[in-house]
Length: 311
Image 1: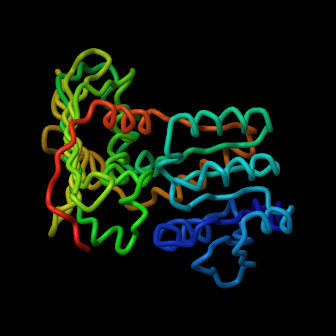
Image 2 (image 1 turned 135 degrees about the horizontal axis):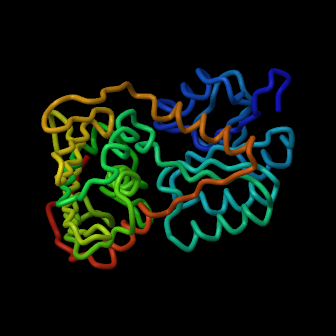
């Protein structure tokens, strides 16, 4: 805790998402004081910068919270070290590369008595809570997810997303799955998946999923990273009492075509408010349902080869 009452926090991984979302949200909020950064390729002005993560943990014992914004394949080892050092940990999505890693982190955090927060930023979009409340007591008949964007616009030069453990199109697709598992009660199952792999990449550029709710209602999802022009982030839910639509990644909500809730992009501000609340209450929040659905999609998926992707 700093002299201002803010929680001292370090940011590990100074890439596009850190600069676009994490840093502005930390600085505009009242809960955290950004005190250090750890990155091999970037620096943050006004704070102490480290290249070596172990050196940071040894040198800055005053910093009690760490936000891991690195690619997912290195988060498990970094989280383990931070937890062992008694630090609270925030994980960017996806929280880990495997369910085993994710569950192991939860066990370690509980044993160490520190907070672990596996974030799903899309759950903090303004219309997600109203949508969850609207669906209470209604019977879901079917759900359609259309999540299509341009990888060149949102992930320029990020080779890691195409490598093993990089998730490919599921990096954005998991955002839709995080909303789905927030608004729909019960366990969702993956029945079939079609995964489209560029001939020169190890991860899919598109995916079609057939899923079911716990009550058996069908869910279809289309994820694609090749959409140019306007981007599409929609979830459509048909119920016995009308049709719900979430648009713009959960920022806007419509019922039978009528706008019910619209909001601004405050997802990451909500993440840090939640992280502070968890720390102060001695709690953790680590829901791995979206990660499980991605894992199940790979297990049930048919591989289809498509044209090479050239950035």
